[in-house]
Image (cartoon, rainbow, N blue to C red; front, side, top):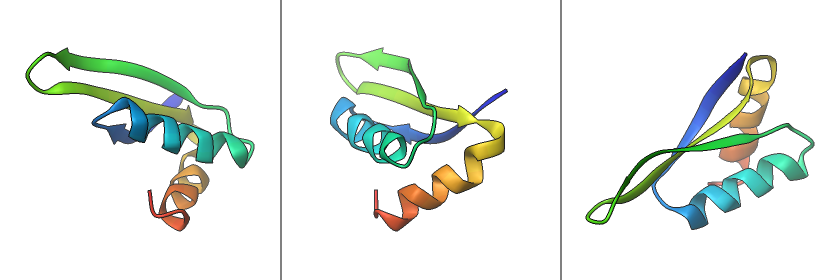
Length: 64
């Protein structure tokens, strides 16, 4: 099962977070969940449930 560990509000942030997690060897999936001309987009970043805590630690360590 996949677990959402981060919600990015733009594609640049999503790319930075995904790259940081991938660089540490985690599997990552993204899904655009909301897109509007007025508010931009919202992107879910998910990892396998068993790796969720470790992947979140990576995000925190890299100040993302």
